[in-house]
Length: 71
Image (cartoon, rainbow, N blue to C red):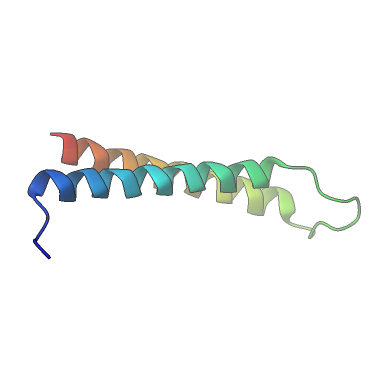
């Protein structure tokens, strides 16, 4: 089996970064979903808003990596 070209490696890396970004969006969507009444932890609001911030930060880092691969 031959080794991939740089272009193939780059394309595969970008594809995986796109998948990761999509999965982070899915996680954020779950955090915005409604849950059954009476089943949330007492700190759900703070925990979920902090999680949303961290997801946003992770997506920003993925975008930075994608830009570096494109550059």
